Image (cartoon, rainbow over all chains, first blue to last red):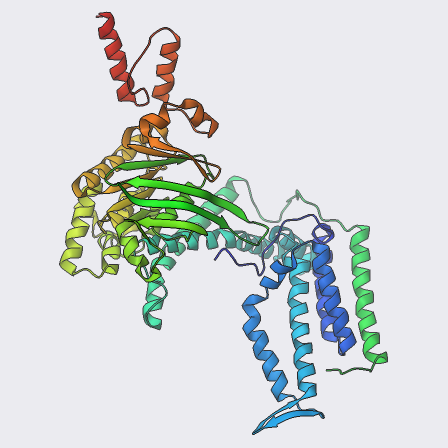
Length: 273
Length: 287
């Protein structure tokens, strides 16, 4: 359980870590849009290069980032195979019975993979790996604050999200602990049929629920003791502010997106999806 | 004779991530059959990791864990059987209670062992006798018990396996002195009745001095010293360097010695110091 990396924050002090979280959220949206705008081989090359560049700038080891892809390897392989064999094209490479493989299919499979991998690598490096969850929800609250005008309780949602995110590692730790305690009593989670395995989870789930409820209660009391009243009149310890480098970063990404669009139009060479 | 042994065991957490951390480095220790061995050390010295090595909850990165001279990892399919022989009570074990009644919860491990209903009933009754839990509590849901009762029910859940080796990680943490003493007494009773080996992790040097025969001292993931209680506790500098408190009785004894009252004997338990003071008074012919 402790080896989960997808969606985990790695503390650091790189340029990406220091950017304003709101800028990073906007940048992520821009980046995702750019990836889906990219249509030909050159664009995909550029997108992949930028993803690698982001990883390098974040100073998080490439190995750690790649490990984050491991959980979706199966989906990735599946998409690749589907794309490979179900794309009709002009250059037939190989045909056997009802299966035929076109050169276009291979291109398409590779490009799709590049798209998904850069999507995951890019967004996780831009956001989850380099932004602490607490700061992230702060940023979301700040970005959505115009909605407060139409009486949407943005602050409450942000607080709920902060609390939920805050307790994920705690819950993981606790699950680990309870699993070990039940294993020490001879629990077996890995054998038997579906029903037997589901039943084997009861000794984990019950204590987990019990402690979550009591923890929620304690947290509520602790918050009230510190006079939490929601959004009204609350000041912040960490104040978000945009700096020059945030603007430069956003403008850079915007230019990159524009370049991709232009490349789609003016560089029709190479195979495009 | 050592019934359980760690040989050159090392272990790290989060290998390959920025959170990599060594938990144990080249630890070799032995646990004598029929004795109570204490494991002491500052927070983060690797006590809890070591304890989870003993019944195969954690696999050592290198080195071996030997039960009766045989590696417990030789045949991973046998691990459940190892865990029935080496009963482990984790820290704050009341979290593990889950079943509808205390009786069913204590019977969880024996059920996993595949015992007959009669045998399970006998073991549950025996276990609650050892931990001093009243029979009337057996049909209550565990959540209705008090903190101390929950702790005892959780320990009974392990004792019901009748383990040859009983390992406890901070069994008395957060209990009042009386609850603490009761827990340790029940462990002693179990040990006497079944000739079991007991391994204890504790922060309280007083408890260690009182209930253990052997002590293992850990510091920064390494074993600094292992020996009898007398060998470890007669070296206060070593304890202080490891960030541990010196037993209060020992401090009293050294202060008395400094003021010209030479005491002799076991000076690390309250009883030992009391005996030494009495002996000193008799020697001087004081009233």
